Length: 517
Image 1 (tube, rainbow, N blue to C red):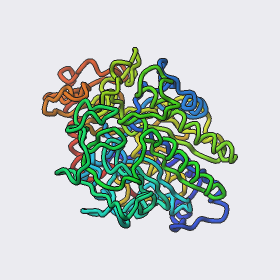
Image 2: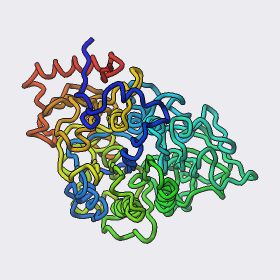
Image 3: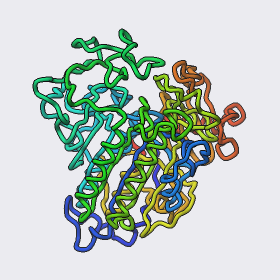
């Protein structure tokens, strides 16, 4: 069966295969550790291609992200693996397309961990290279086994797949349980007030948004009408844990403080920080000091708050004199959505702001705005600032980091992750050869062409108003000349449609796309 592979790693080509293979788990040759950079991966939520200044936004100001971009390689053709959060995160941390594994769709807040403990992951690769690893912020990859008891030890979790430390929002801000988890325990939980969580029938006597709208400070536009926490009704039912419940307006401060603390603690050794922000996901309830700052309502204010979070991480690196030796990646888990379930005036107050920029679609969409996202890589010691149109995907971070740290992936590891380190460091303008995008249906990008396989005909989401692109007929777009995917050329190029459909089916059936030696 035909296999599709990328070029050999460029950054470590001076290392022989023998030397690279000699890097045993947790052990480095003398002098190697200090040659590797710290890595900080800042993963925004629902941030669109056109939501920040360095990608064309003019209605909302993002000075910290823009400054980072001016010091980095900024990518114009970088993609998340999926148009929704859970599959993007799964693919990035495992190097495997999420559509290959059942149960990796958008998860409820009480889902079990979907990454099998013991498998090679992005953080476990970092551990093997001698790094201290931490995950702070939104998780949404499940925790524990089935029927998890939130009142005891929460395992398995991030500590079982390669992280040394974690401080988590278990799922999303709009899903229960609305508590933080640090390592294996709910933070601030009082034993006398145990937590119960249900995604089936109501539990306890907690009021819901559906039955008590008078208690809400933010009303749902669709769904999101179950248990009320902090004046906001959520998806799912929760009782107990009142002392442990978060205050939405404080989330950005809390997780940014934890991220800074992790950097402080590990300043004298190499570290990998996965900092997954809550912003700009719903419910958008920014801290009062950001309210009104954007002029675009809560969604715009959440972007300003996100920009502050990025600035605080960069300031911490500067203060500790770590910036030169730290590789910072900033990107987003999927494209933008405006109305995603709450009446927060996001639509009414856009004021000409275009979250998707020149792209078509958004979150949930098979069009490119679903997965083409802001992405920049800064490493002052090695990377010169610039612009790159190389095709890269977050799923490639795993193989690229392995190359960066002189490791060779085993045949069964990261089956869809390619080493694109040369592109990430802007040593080459060539990224991956092709990319599969997930948005309910699959798309294939190769060269200037994008093929979207036939779907069930759901062209527009009734809830969000986003164009989903699920046509019953195949679609083919020339992205070089039609970035906005306005002209379906499938009928004019049946030979390309046939070629891409066959290639996509081959990728689907093969179980992997990364060739191994």
